[in-house]
Structure formats: structure tokens, C-alpha cells
Amino acid sequence: MENIKAYIESGILELYVLGDLSPEEKLQVEEMAAKHTAVKAEIDQIEQSLEFYAEEYAIEPTEAVRGKVLNGLLVNLGDDRTFTKPRKHSDEEVFENETDNVLPLQVRQNKFYKYAFAACLTLLLMTVYGMVNLYSKLQESTTQLTVMQLDKEKIANQVNVMDTQLDMYRDTSYRILRLKGMAKAPHSAMTLAWSPATKKVVVDMHSMKLPVHDKQHQYQLWALVGGKPVSMGVFDMNADTAKSVKEMKLTAAADAFAVTLEPMGGSINPTLEQMVVMGVAK
Image (cartoon, rainbow, N blue to C red; front, top):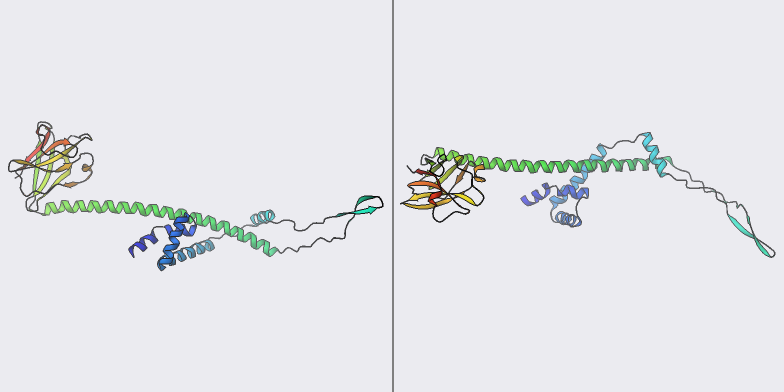
């Protein structure tokens, strides 16, 4: 049922009524209408709405416009014609003009039909104009709905990030650790939150101060567990800093945390010469 509702709200039925679909798309809509009464009812409703719109905004043509239309459409349906026929004289044929008594057909033109035709033509033009405007408005509405949907998803993501941050501050099991710059980058700094109870490690991306790296490298977070480095995952300064926080791999124990600059995808063991920040887990 949700799929049928989404299909109806997609705008394809309006384009079908306006005749702005390819033959394949038109056949698809007709098959859907045959299978689902809701689709058929929606098509009927759109057609009625267009008819009501045309009647509501129909404009009576002025006398000048009506006269121009009629003068261009009306033709002279009858005229007088003369015919010639040959007359024979003894040895040769001599053609002489003779006027037959042919009466021209008298056509009585009914003004009512002329005006009715002109009115129908004008109404047709106004209907086409109204349908073009309606189609334009439908396109604008579709664009606005798409923008609103993207904004909704963006807001939802921001809310999820804020919920994660609030959970960190509410949960007293989290430890806030400040990692300080090493010899390679003495002015660097990074903050992370670690909960031994939940094993979660969350990096604060907004407050991070690390050198920007190239596209062939990534930063890798390490946890020192029992004197051995354990990879907690990689992150990018270019892409991940657009987020507020980034969750890394889980760990229940850690003596310290450090960050090194490694090739894209990370390394099995940390490159100690490329260590930028480090902090003890208290």
C-alpha cells in the first residue's frame, strides 16, 4: 500500500493526464490503473481537476479577437460559374460560349455556429495554456518536495549526532581524553571519549586540530593495550571533519591512545615516525 501511495505521489499520473510520457511509461501507468483502483481513481480526479480549472479560468474572447478568428476560418462556399459547350456547324466544330442557366447554391450561414466554433477554438487555446501553467507548477512542486526531503534527512542526521553527543555527556562511564601533539606536529590536539563499560570510542571531529593530509594518506587511531598497539580505525581530515563526532572501533581496555599518519586504508602496525598526537587513558 505504501508503494501505491508513493507511486501516486510521484507526479507521474499528472504527466500521464497531460500526455507528457513516453509510450512505455504511458503503458506502465495504464497497467497500474488496471491493477489498482486507487491509481485509476487518482487519474479520474486529476482529469476532473483539469476540466474544472479550464472552466474556472476560461476567458471570453473580445469582439476584435472573435472577428479575426472568424474571418480567417470562413470561406466563400458558393460562387457563380459559367460553362462552355461546343456547337457543331457543318464541316467544323465551332466552340462558342454559352451561359447555362445554372443557379448558384445559396448557402445560408448560421451565425450561431460560427460563434460557437470560434468560442470552442478560443476555449481550447485557453485550456492548453492553463494545462501548460499547471504542468509548470507541478514541476516546481516536485522540485520543492525534493529539496524538503533532503533538508529533512539532513536534519535527521544532525539530530542523531546530537543524541550521540548528549549520551556521551549523560553517561558517566565515558572518560574524556585529551591527546596532545608530538614532535612531528607539536601544535596538534584531539579530544576523544571512551567508555570502558560500553567499549565505545568516539572522536570529537569539530575540535580536532591536525595537519591536513593528502589523498594518499589517512589518519589511524591506535589503542595501546597491554603494551601492544591495536588499530581503532581510520579517519580523514577532509571528509570526516564535516561530522560532529565519529565512532571508532570498540575496546574494553586501553592504556593510551595515539594517532599516526598512514597510507590510505591504514597499516597493520603504527608508523611511529608519523605519530601526531598521543594521550594516556586515565
